[in-house]
Length: 427
Image (cartoon, rainbow, N blue to C red; front, side, top):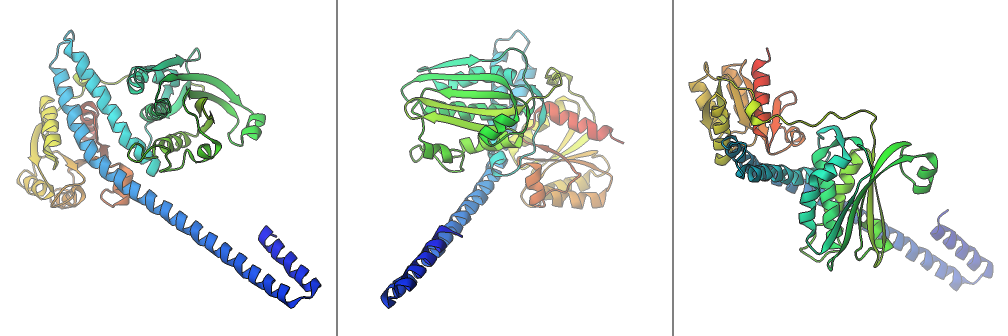
């Protein structure tokens, strides 16, 4: 029995025993007021849930739009930077600058991926990676984020810490936590990133209320900043919750951290004291196999071809950069700037075109509509769909059918060339 009902029943009984009519009337009024408060509380709770649902839907739509436009820009940057890299000798000092542009472009793309990971389930590109190595890779970038008035320390446990994870999203988690720590130390302080191996046993799980037994890596990000009170700690991972001034925080950074770690079967914890600082810890399951050394195929070893490709892309910069890449590797390119032009130009060259490279979202006709008309002319023509949206959004919007070859922007030229060769060589 709830406290409200118990209290109401007690008051009814008390008034009945006294036998005074005015007391029984008070009891009835009391019951009416209490029921009214309950209904009002339930109404406010439902309104809050509806508001949160609407916010989630809005941010999902916003993320999709950002992904499309932002990834088009990044695709062009990566393509042009790669072309510059191709023409530079190995001893050219400018080559380092180009490599930095490419590295930062790839990291910029993870901002959109992180936002999508928060707003909906994102397809992960997971492999066996070493968390210590990931931290070392982004150490220089993180040091630039925090500024000169903060002492930056790295304390990593010896040996590899192998986890099955998406490297880009792990970098995003680190950047979000470091940026949060920086903002908590406006007058400077000490920021420490450390790693530790731990075994979660039944005692730990009972004490903390979460976890599955097994071996984990703990990555801790600690600051000596302003700290948080208990109420703030309870809400810190809620979407749109922020303690920053209007215009200085979206309330999404820590929500992204929570979503990404959770999607990797991990856990996030926070400990903080006002005036003493904050420590965020995220736990990831360790794996017992050796990770192969990560290798990325350079553009110089990308496969070549001599086939004719119809390239349909409405963004002129992306189209031009992609054309240059394809032509440098032997392909002949027919360009189209929208879906209708793609259908028309295929009709003019239907016996020569061996592959369609077609953007999904285009004016006049979208990629799927154009493809449907093209395969009526020649059902055996092969196609690769490209988009700044992710495949799951394409399926949801019914702009792409499952089973079609798909590559998402931003696309590294090598990845695109390999995908083209795989499809053309597949009999």
